[in-house]
Amino acid sequence: QVQLVESGGGVVQPGMSLTLSCAASGFTFSNYVMHWVRLAPGKGLERVAVIWYDGSSKYYEDSVKGRFTISRDNSKNTLFLQMNSLRAEDTAVYYCARDTAMIDGYFAYWGQGTLVTVSS
Amino acid sequence: EVVMTQSPATLSVSPGERATLSCRASQSVDKTLAWYQHKPGQAPRLLIYGASTRATGVPARFSGSGSGTEFTLTISSLQSEDFAIYYCQKYNNWPWGTFGQGTKLVIK
Image (cartoon, rainbow over all chains, first blue to last red; front, side, top):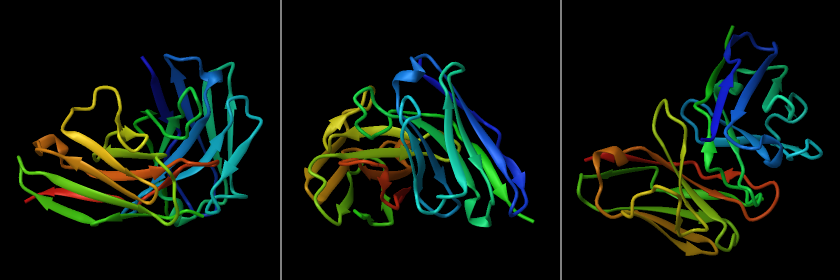
């Protein structure tokens, strides 16, 4: 069965960096567009980054553009989110999510999430 | 940029009753609208896609309707496990991914 397992969250100070990972299994990872979605305290879901199945195209929401980098290693079935210059407003649970086989843009599979807390 | 607006922010309903949640798009998204259920500490769960198609394993008490700019998620007879936060998401064009701010469904 499809599994997505995030890791790498933790507590960091403002301005620091953190890299999240999402280990995928149960499907052919290289065939799917992948997303990072976050849920900040008291706010709604926000998709922050998306990467094409071969890494050839990436998109970032304005809130993280220039600070976050999405990447993937298809040989290791792993998705990454490198987060630099972290701010208090980046505090959230970060989920990886898989797009559909037809790249429809909605997410049938999600990980359980990893918590990132940015605080001094 | 298409903005998704959900209403109400909080909906109080008694178990066994019907719940109706709304999602409005600032411009037409045709039928490219999904609904998710999210409970604290869990992964969000896809309920509906294509505005009205139930995802695999979703009970029949969940139904979606609408097209263009107005959408509705209806839960016909609320069960205890249905109390959660519900999000709509439009996905009509790249880069997809725009969610509404959510409706919290609470027990009355």
